Image 1 (cartoon, helix red, strand yellow):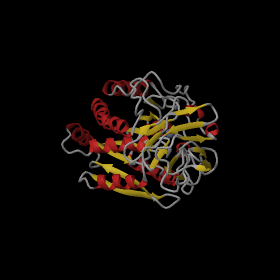
Image 2 (cartoon, protein in one colour):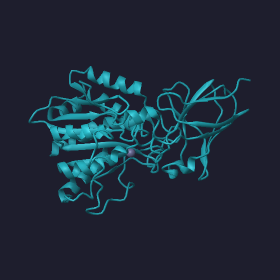
Image 3 (cartoon, rainbow, N blue to C red):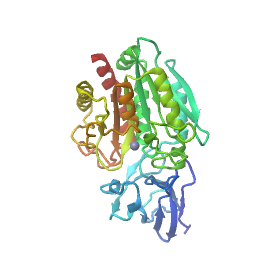
Image 4 (cartoon, helix red, strand yellow):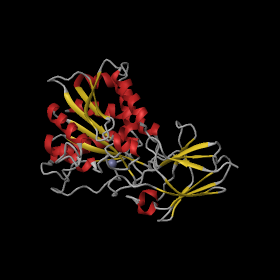
Length: 377
Ligand code: ZN
């Protein structure tokens, strides 16, 4: 019988093997992000295990950034790298145990369906092929990757500048699946809602704010160990060039609507967090936020408004975060969308949980939500 083999030496791979004992007992650890403060993302391939009942124990799960993220959570697995399904997973507060009997010689396991750098480049190339899109590399990341901005629609004085940023936290891959769905709909020339939106607005999209962290298999930081969503007040051109250059571009274009797309480890819901705690917050900003959230809840049963983060008390905003910085600086509707790693518990699909396709479909619905919101303004 061939020996079990575990590998993670590939794009977004992350696991360390403590021991792989026959017939199927694997002891594993998640590698920490650069800087040692964060960890939770995992992605590895198991080979030579067909038809063997495997018990994969991640021994340091309780030491991760959000241990509660593993409560009521099930890992995803894939044979072909395209279709991901959930596998039995338990967490006792210390160790995460994945139990699975592979039906193929090679199976991949991950925290959530990965979104590879290769697919990211395909997304950029495909979008750039549309006559409506310009792509621009804003800077090189610390590891030397292009940080790409897509501009959809024709900029002009009469156009409303809309900004979408995603995946500041690279392990939150659902954010880029969301972008894929959003762009696919936005770039469909036969979609009336998309055409109407682009008549009024120009949409700036950064599909992946943190390509280095994505490829390195990080949960939360870039190649320099910086949490980009704590760098907006004072970005450093060397340590957080991703934010430095996107922020500079925002100041060039102005921002009238901003959405920063994330995933949340703990809460099994789709929800939006606003900029309630910023110094300039007022009734009109509150009513814009409330209106958007309730519109989105009407448009998508997967979205809801009951569960989410505690609202920041007045004046307590963290202006190092994208949403708070943009809300305060531009006085516009700026929001953070959070999608679950687990499932949308208000509208669950237990077999697959929250998924790439569900993320993409939610992204597509934002074309309507943004169009209807700007039409009212
Ligand atoms: Zn995040």
